[in-house]
Length: 313
Image (tube, rainbow, N blue to C red; front, side, top):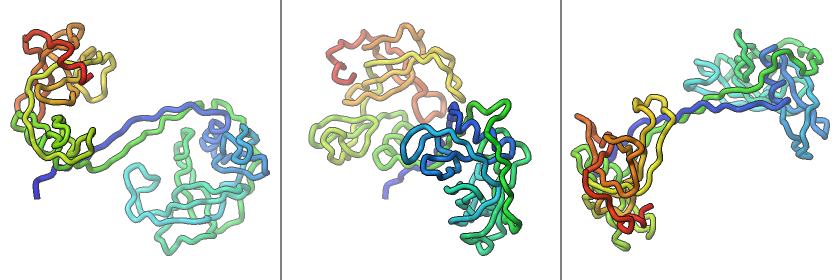
């Protein structure tokens, strides 16, 4: 079996959103140790609150305080908590219908084990020590055997309300490039660029995908291309990317390598950004010990005629 590469990959970015009046009141309430729901047209109290009525689709703002105690409606045990989850030890994910609410809120339940959790058990909110106006202001739920705690009748009006939130989004997974791109990456390690030729249309694709995107048939015939190529189109980057040590502005371009029927993208270096142009002839530059080109630079050849690359724009 041929060697196939794989590596861990993380996609992460902060997601910023503004809040409407209902979500603002809900999150500000959590900061103040108050749980608010919203009453819909059918009389039900929704927690977490919705901004639009699930029955009529009209905007709703009738805020209702509910109790910090409630009942577990269903649950699942989490044996191995992951980074960023509410608790660092095994816990239960639970849906809790708070007293005074008609829908359930999803959160964590701190319990010694799955035998201590059951549908119908009584729980209450455990508040976080430091609260900022986020769902994490509820640290978790905990078992509770006392009487229901009555809500205070808060109207949902607060000083210094929360107007927006920043939620980190992160995806961790293992990426495998597959047979075709593994061969492509291995060739780059020896400073060669290889694609694959379609047995039907005879086009050469770089990087290879293992199948022809036009004909849909499998590709296996390897073809070495380049290393020189032609800039078909490009953009000037003016915003500095996090963890990328490249001064702005710089140019990212689509480059049609000689012998290839698909343009790949790469950075253009070794000349001012305002001198990059369509038709510019370029070649790869490898850093010492690198497995892939650091950037492409001009070859000094005359520009390629437009008709030679117009089909690859």
